Length: 261
Image (cartoon, one colour):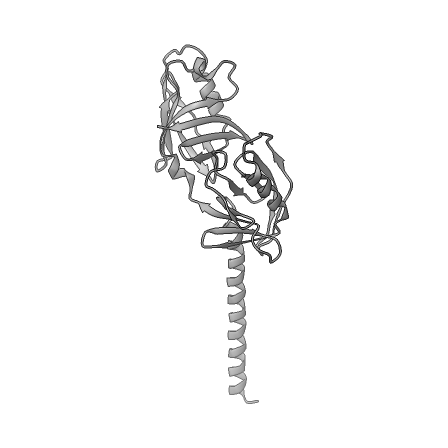
């Protein structure tokens, strides 16, 4: 083999090797992006066992929320949650988790969802639709992506439920209910505590939410309404929005509920 032919072969070998590296890198990037397409997002249940699911079950939206190692869900009644293992190659494993114990008029969707989560072993995402599957059979459940709730937070909300109070809600707030006015663009919230005006910052990450220090006017207030409102607000770590209802949650427990005004 003369030197010229050898040089040509060497260049071709390098080129083929580069293509291999590029293809591998492209594949790796595709795989790395697969989990990011589903985790940290909220998905509305739209189909179970091939049957369409209504937007509201028992007045609540059925959904699935996936994080890197945990999941939370609802079939329109109880909250469901547990450990999650999700892989870059489309494999998924839901562990049997904890559930609240409420009884609701329609439990069929919740029961089917709970069963199918445990049965699922892989997932696919196509055009904003998440499918949970078992092997290569028909999808066990389908979900559509819910757009970021942060923009839905914007506007005025009025408190209509708070947990932990020793007296009835109307006794806690006999004259004025606390309000929250969110500005999603600036990340600020202000309102009235039922007595004083206040303002603070807020941050969201998926359905997680946190609030900055509360700054308020200093009027003397009767009763424990304001103190209960502020202290409960500090315990909130997640939220959900369904229609015109905003719910603040601590762990798996709903501790505050607001109605849009």
